[in-house]
Image 1 (tube, rainbow, N blue to C red):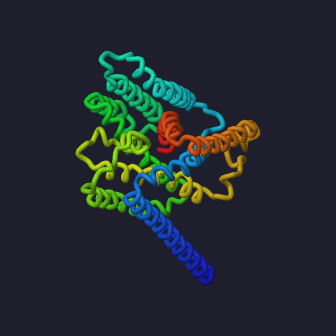
Image 2 (cartoon, rainbow, N blue to C red):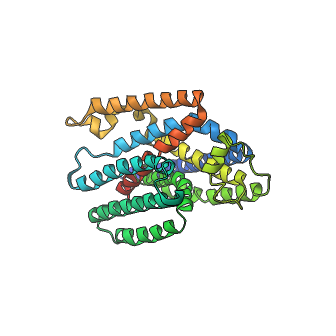
Image 3 (cartoon, one colour):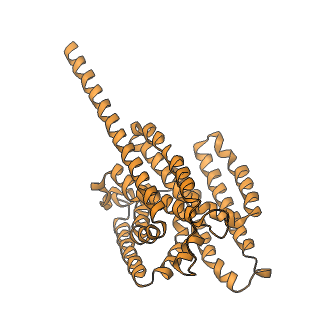
Length: 343
């Protein structure tokens, strides 16, 4: 008995040591990728923005779509109102977002005030998220969900003070949501890594401060009224004239690289790369009452969409970039309900 107890204790210690080593390797890989991305984003911001979007924009959307499919329940049950409002909101808000440039070109708003429709869209989005949070709170029955509407109303008021700045804030916050997804995924799959991962996140503000300190003085990126102009405007150069456009583009590219890395590499490796391509690993396709052919067709269609996106980038990068960022709002909105389901 004593011998068996010693063996079990030794085995437990060895497993704990391996867990500690694996967590440290994961944190080291995360920190190394973050430093590498920050260095390249600071050195070649425009080039990295063009290349990274070409290589990773389509694939990361496919991986994200695949991940969301794996999180859908076979039957909605009591969650039916939540998912109905979630999917309806994604469709309606995306359609409205695509219509905003049309309304602007038609001078639908008096004096061509672009901020009014933008503020309305942001308001509807915030209230939609608040409704989803309220519905989710009824299932979780924890106190902090009751703050959904007070927080939403506070954000709505800030949005009306500066709609374009609020939209720019979404551009910079959205890539960081992937880190939150990774946190929740680790909590479910590798809880023993969670503390080490959260400590590793401390490197991000250090890198961002270093990028700002190093790049805020050099000459701004030249305005060519073409592709470079689109990249700098998307990063907020016009809205933040006192900040170097090189800083804005570099920081935005750095955050996007983290976003791509989480969806394409980190979540895939942690979840098991050998099962990631297995359609049967998705509950909706595995269950006898599921939809294996439909799920398989959707994933194949997603691969074809990625290939078409690559072709579009190769033929006309600027036009395809504008088109991609217009439709990409759908996946930005989709992250809200699926993240709530993981909280």
